[in-house]
Length: 133
Image (tube, rainbow, N blue to C red):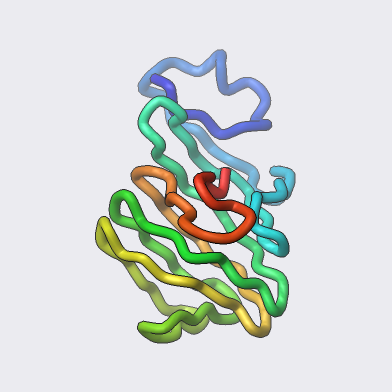
């Protein structure tokens, strides 16, 4: 198994079929290439690109034009995120199909849980050609 939660002690000692319990509060926030967006990685599989993470958006944050290479799912825990297609408020969910392109913003800040099958590809701005990892 190549899926892990970074910074969780003792997980290498677990058998391949044992559950992984994660103390999310103890995980560090990690800066992303997008200024104003930090993440806590809950699950990642570098071999496949699978990622589940909390993203903390500072007020006024904007993600440059990017494309979803596979389905992306986001549940907004606090605040809201918006783009040219609509707005997702706290307690609501959006998913985007493969090939979806947009610029996402959070005028007042947000905390979201997002799941990716593959990393996004940024098409413009400082993060062009990168993913958020």
